[in-house]
Length: 48
Image (tube, rainbow, N blue to C red; front, side):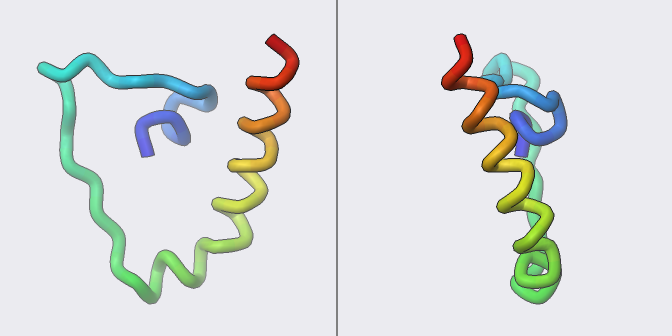
């Protein structure tokens, strides 16, 4: 979730970690968008 909010592959500082949650129904509704973001992030990390 942190990487998605930052728009790049990122690891939060441990003292700034916050909990994120989503219901199963919302997760299923968002599957297509999450997959698209994942593919974009995967492409970006391969270019470095």
